[in-house]
Image 1: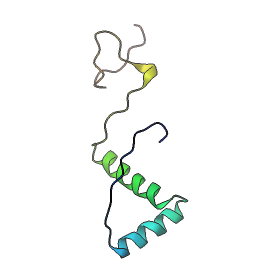
Image 2 (image 1 turned 90 degrees about the vertical axis):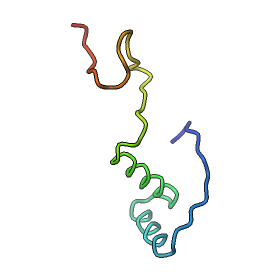
Image 3 (image 1 turned 120 degrees about the horizontal axis):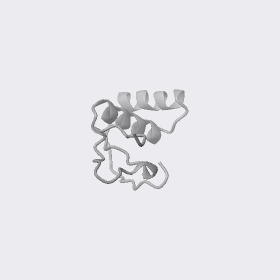
Image 4 (image 1 turned 135 degrees about the vertical axis):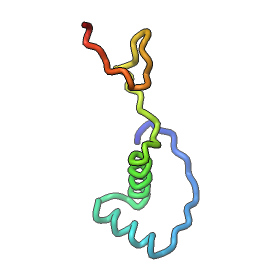
Length: 76
């Protein structure tokens, strides 16, 4: 996540849940913080709540929206 702005916040989790998260993180070779970020990102992705990533090398051409609804053309 290099280059992304991050925000810190306090999260209260019961000890059984935290133990499960820590064990899962260890199984995946992640830090507890990294595991929590992954869990949240996956939940947002599955719920289609993540903002769309904009690719710098595939900016929409004139007249096309960047909504992703229109497939790119290959010059035809």
